Image (cartoon, rainbow, N blue to C red):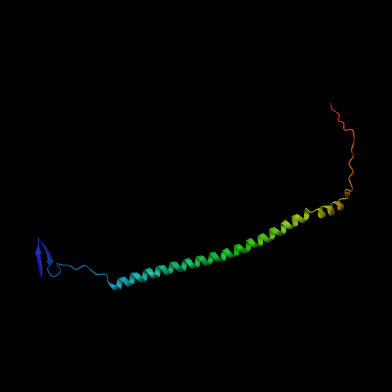
Length: 114
């Protein structure tokens, strides 16, 4: 039954309109889309973390290699600066090794002054 008030037709059967309930179909669709979005986000994060892990492992192995190389270089420098190495090189330069050193001492210490 319809009633006309102020030029508008109003249905009397639907006068007390019930609020619409959230349909289970839309709830399930929303829940599924949220789960799918979280799953995709999780996969992207796992992929990025895996790639970073491989890069980190490569950088650690490179750092260990460089540390080993540095230790070798420091050993070469120490060997080149050692007394025996310098002594051997001095002989190839036709230099004479210093033997016993005698110091002259005087009982009268006098200085000349201008």
